[in-house]
Length: 359
Ligand SMILES: [Zn+2]
Image (cartoon, rainbow, N blue to C red; front, side):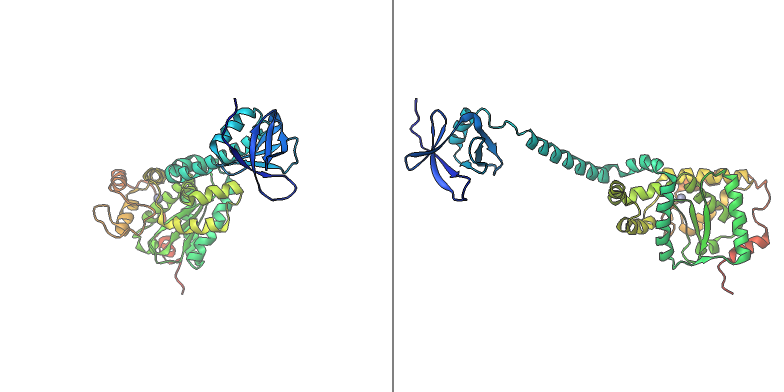
């Protein structure tokens, strides 16, 4: 039974790039016919599929010239040829491999995107503890440079003030039984804030120091920041806010890379710790103050004075430590009478207040 239909194709003979209009005839092999003459006959089993545009069936033949090609655009002809040529896809496992690689690459990109939008906080919680301390120190150094640049690099170290500050921090550190690196400094800035950086750097800004009415208030704030250090919260927050750049940096081993760090340096001041992190840092501060025999309430007093309460809706300058009614309630509830000695003497407190004084 022969078909009367004409099976058109384009033939490239492999010698020139001339496209020749041919017809195909099914005989002992696939006959390529030009002007009623069979110019080549390809054995069915030697015909292979070659890479080509999706709508076109492009064929090569193992027994023909390596660059010889047949291009079939007509769907019926494609079906017919495919029915005769049983070995079209023999030896094409490598091509399948390529698609698998493309598929998994796409899947990887998609999962990073999904992680960014849905899972970064979740990932950050699990990733941060896995980051070695040495790497945290490197990240801390990079962020620290950003911070010092933001504050013109001015730390305060008037001798008597620095002595009082060191004394205070050491007391808190020992009471907190801290086992991580710690380096606390006072920064010359009118902004009433305090924050912790990865790697154990804690900064108290002079603006907050000046708002404080006594050493217990500052002790509470510092103890709270030490809590963030002890729990490595700022590292977790950087993983979170650094998001994709951080993950990509992690993939390429460029954690401290410029772009990611610029982003992190900025977002460090915009982003808030989670309520859980705040609660834990508060708990740490309360515990430290209790061990020193001091009431934790002054911390709450200072924060409310600076930031207001949720219902008060005043400007929250301490945006990195959102003050909640809940936090205030916790601190107010914990109000044992001061049973321990003054955390700083009146003289030491006065010296600390003046740590940034220039005269
Ligand atoms: Zn905090």
